Image 1 (cartoon, rainbow, N blue to C red):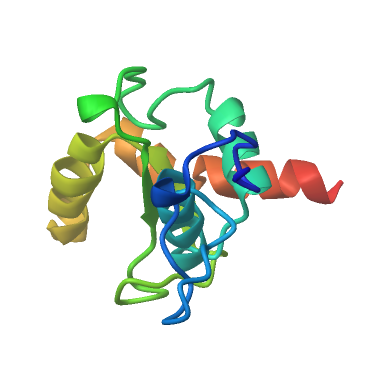
Image 2: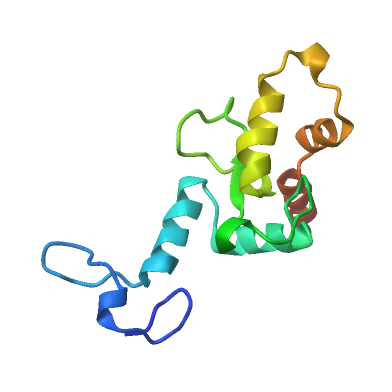
Length: 139
């Protein structure tokens, strides 16, 4: 069966089932996981790909190219806008490595405002890559 996302021909067991009737999903398991992940952040594959290109294929903060264990980058979004696991998409800031997302940003944003003196993160939070890309695309 051909995956509608990656276009690869794969064995049927590489697709999860859509319902109890055993109908396979249109995406293979890895692609389905990515589609669901992006949907949870209100993103399309096209916008996520454009954003990653806009960032030079790197973490938007530390600029690392290699992501942990071959993973895809984490989606950073403003938790003040959308608390919880789902995002409206407008509050998505960038694609970042898991270290910057889990340790750097979480720790930094928890600091009182007077202690937030790191210029790189202040610049990132003031005008994140996704906002810049949205401005470019709206012209």
